[in-house]
Image (cartoon, rainbow, N blue to C red; front, side, top):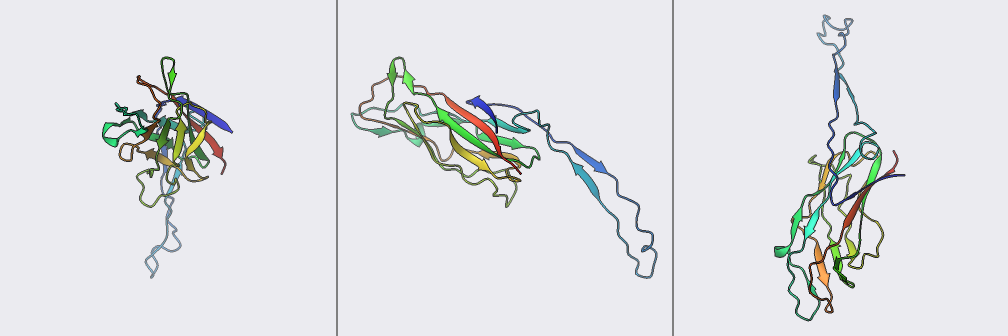
Length: 207
C-alpha cells in the first residue's frame, strides 16, 4: 500500500498522451468482388499517466477548505447554518488511465483557539455524489458521511472510494451545495477556532 498525504489541498495536473496509429491496408481479397465490401482496422494505443506522479499515477488534486462563519452562542448546543458556511475547492482525484482503484481518507486535529479546545464539537462531512462528467459512470459511489470530533481523536477515515478499473478520469465531490456542518456543545466558550484537515490518497485497490 502506498499513500500520499496533503493538508487542505494538493495540486498537480497530468495529461495522458494518445498515440494514433494509421489504419492497415484493406483486405484486397474481398474488395472489388461482386459483394463490393471488405474490412479494415482502426487502432490506437492509450497510455496512462506517469506512475512517478502522485500515488502510482493517481493524483489528489484538491480538497475543500471549510469556513463555518460566525456561530452565535446562546447557552444551548448549536449547529452552523448553510448560509454562513463557505466551502472553497472540491475534493478532486485525477486518474489518467490507471487500472488500480483508490481511496481518499480524512482526519482532523483538535479544533483550538489559543488554549481552548472545542471538546464535544463535531465536524460533519455529508454524503455527496461525485462525478467525472461521463454519463453513466457510477464506479465511484457517494461519499461516506464522516463525523470528525472537535478534540481530533479520530484516525483516518475513508471518504471516497474507487474500485479496481473504476474511478478513472477526473472525479469531483462538491461540498458547496450540501454543506458540512459544525455542531458546538452548550459549554463552549467564545474564540476563533481552527482545525487542520488532512486528506490522504491511498492507492490500495489492485486490478
